[in-house]
Image (cartoon, rainbow, N blue to C red; front, top):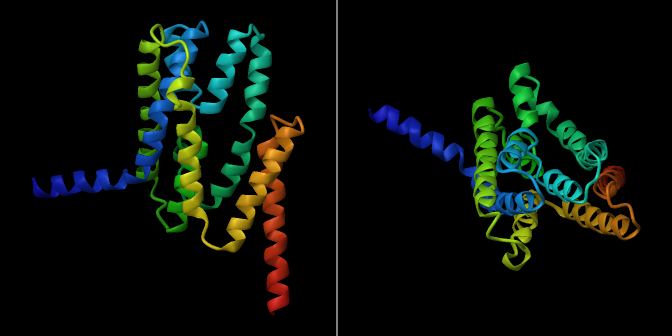
Length: 235
């Protein structure tokens, strides 16, 4: 009995990295649920999207496009472009998954989000690459998103506007916190600030769907160039 209890508590401690994400996903999932119901989706469709799609920004965008009467093919194309940044995130984490089984890699990719990417980037650098724990963290995060969605769908008829509750700020605030944890030196800070400035520049310039991807590529290239130049001058 003692060993089983120790394993149980060890399992719970292994889920600790998911706590910040859960705290952000519950209110944002709730906001999505409310917006989806008010946008014309049924409760089943609202929850099903969180189970199948599981992409916060894409779901919120899809709901707004659905409410505006945009045709399904345009919605699919738009959300596909928005989620192209997942190619960069997957490429960044791929070297840590070389010893994983194909099924484990598929399950990991299915539940990879911006926030879980931030969590696993820190974990993988510390050598915490066990598939079981990693997939458990991802599942915990998605269940929190689904739980928030269910609550939002149930309250959808009572709440017409989520802005007064400032729920839309929970996700950016959580992601900023995860980003800060990854900044370990001046080069990381430079890359973060450059990506932020470039993303805002592209957004203001009208590139509202590619701004994150372009900013990420350019900021990473800038940081790589600075790192190469620093090594050459110091050698």
